[in-house]
Image (cartoon, rainbow, N blue to C red; front, side):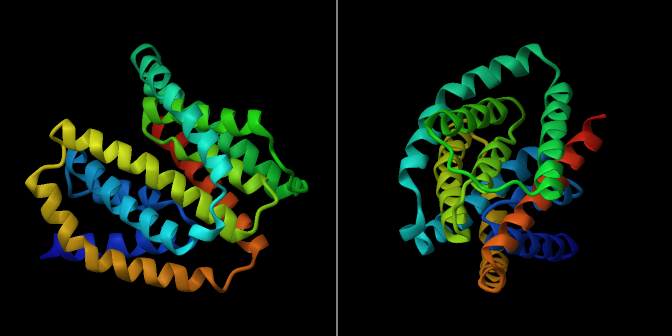
Length: 240
């Protein structure tokens, strides 16, 4: 009973965060679920739940998706994945995570303190963000930050940023879940936990999207920077 209540509570909070920003489900869910669920069970579960949110938000915000950026991001992400796997085999994962964390903290600190003006990014920065996401995703499984940073630099509205992020994560999440299914990681236990989590997930999404309607474009970007900063600090702390 305790585990069921804890699972429901974690999913509501994590669902709220991703419903609000378009990312961050794993930031909340992974460390907390790891306290009472084996990581080989929690990771496929988290990916599936986050995928549900990304699909739902993508449908809701479909008119704001920047498909041109999506095509470039995904085309660059795919070749980056095997390089990430190669890096994982040859470089300690802790070093990769700490390096990424330092970059995230440094970048977001600059954005929050210096407050530079947003700017349109061309095809090369877009491809670079996708490529880095592929490398990081293939190595330590946390490929989101480069794409999140990319979207927050652009002079997009909160709808455009959130829609593009969620659609990108929907595609990448679907690819990862298919890989998990093919590898036998989506077990009966994972499916059981997934099904009993859906009502809590729906509540979290509803509350998150409700809160999202109450924040401005500027407030959304500031919140995104703060969350990436926290994620960077957490990655450094966890791997030191």
